[in-house]
Length: 594
Image 1 (tube, rainbow, N blue to C red):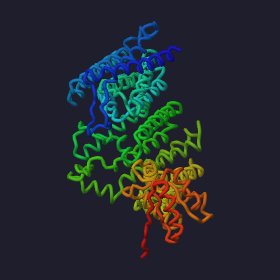
Image 2 (image 1 turned 30 degrees about the vertical axis):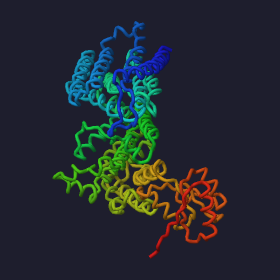
Image 3 (image 1 turned 180 degrees about the vertical axis):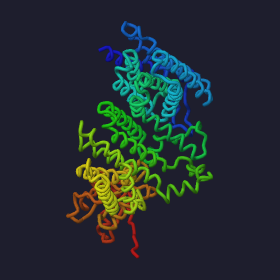
Image 4 (image 1 turned 135 degrees about the vertical axis):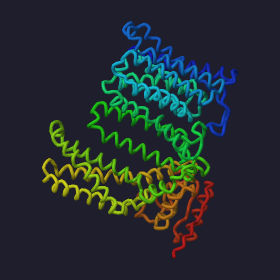
């Protein structure tokens, strides 16, 4: 009941305080003008972090009326104090424009005092190297939230998800005071989103992002330092919960370095910006990152409930998904054709080029992870309890040779010579050939070296099915993401293709494969009644000429493309007449067959 009251109080307070800050900020000059490296086109009041901090503090004051938390003040007081210190640093930065170095040094200093205070309360569990890592962690999370504040509602929403999962997963280790603090922070963030959702009427500013980052980083250190085996289970859970800010920061810093740009130089090159460049709306990009945060938190919850041993394949799968997303978004231009200029000029460029394009090192390393995870997961599915403990040593002993023979089989199958962007049904044969050959060789290895003692045929069948699905999913991921980006691209013209024959299908494939066309096929119109109400190459056939007018309206199309050479003059005249009534253009594509 107290937590609910805290949450509601902080939410209402943030809405009220946000309105006050929004009205007073222009008089203080706290307004962010439109800039080339910012993602807004209107002057917007800032320093909304004042509202977040005030609402969080107001909700947190409830701990003063709870005598059960005051005796443990040494274990929780450093965290809100660190948040207050970073809030002051943020205020100074918002008003005086501190240098990036000054902010970094300040966060490290505050982090050092925080770690010192936390370590004093439990000196037996915190080693010297853990203290150093804790200081760097605190500064890193503070600046990760600061960098994540690059699109309306993004930092506040992601922090809300992160704080919620930290409270849920570490309810007992955090203690009542820090639980109240995080619940109050969740309420304040939810209330602030009233002003900060797209289109934002108030920005949080550095005082908000640094304050939020400090509370999340400080609260996360408490269960990590208090664990019997520090930086094992709790640390992994925290990394999963805060995957979005950490992924975005690492992604941006690496790519700025590869582009030869200073890491502290701002720009529209974050994960959210690249999603928008792919064609997603601002709100859709933010929701995608919300979803990533939710999936990371859910993975952490599954890991906590079932344990590392049971859920290791799930963590590996999540890591593969995040890696694939990073690789895909890294190909989206963001630096005016200078994205990898520093890499190309380095002395290692020829070697790296060979690794990437000739030896396909990235694909091989990905397959190594997939082979290991699928083989392990097959054992988890086949055996349980004591049986698993009995048979798991055979997995450990055979894993190296299984990885070796399966990588060799995938290589022999020709899978590494195929492009991910064009992966289709024809490439499926290579996957089946490679995975099947690898499974057969694995069975032969088990029979030769172990006489098949300690092995199960069902394990190899499950492994074949899992690895096939994993390889197909990863190979098809780029094509799928291209398709999703093309269909959601707000800058593309929505096109109805008249004629679902071979030429029409070829046109649709080219539209999706060539983003420079800026065309999004939304429907086919075809006079063949056998094709009506079917899906062809992923596009619905809406019917014949009689359905054109209705389809133009329902699909909000911009243009009709005549693809079939068999369309007669009378039909074309009717099509153009209908399109003229609705103000839509008509074009005929001519294809030459040689």
